Amino acid sequence: MTRKREAYQSGHTPKFMVVVDETAECDRAIVFAARRAARTGHRLLMLAVIEPKVGDGQALFGVADVMRAEAHADARAKLDAAADRTMTLVGVEPELVVREGKLSEAILAQIEEDPDVAILVLAAGTGKDGPGPLVSSLARTAGSYPIPVAIVPGQLSDEEIEALA
Image 1 (cartoon, rainbow, N blue to C red):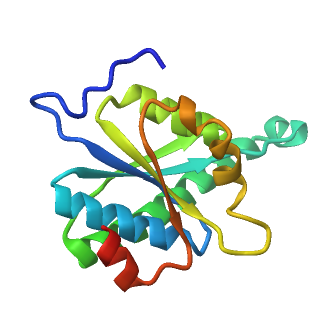
Image 2: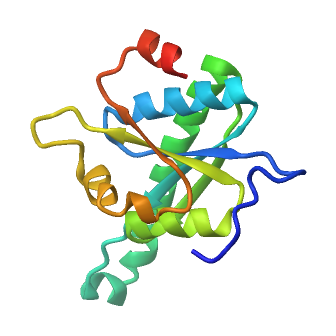
């Protein structure tokens, strides 16, 4: 990361960036990020990442473009639903971003390209398999991120999130 963080400089408004996915715990991260953004006057950015899986035959027959369009539409639908939730919950209208590629690389690229992203908010799984592959992989490298990473446990209640936020 070479780009200077500008989130707290004059004329900039810091952003909480939450990664939106299909996990049940994701809602907890969205609620936390929305409440914190509302309380602090920060903005909210919601990121959905699609990881296209294109085989050789799919590219040959033009299926890859259809699959990519469907993946973008699905990601956008998830983001729209999450945005509706934050508007209803706390009146915060988020910035919605869809990126393509590997999840961890897409997150880092978004942080690099948007100097106002100040805090990354992730949902942690609650199952016996651990906090989830993203949180597990990022935990090993979180110290190298140019911004703080907030990990929200998926079992927190609305009241607990309200108290923390």
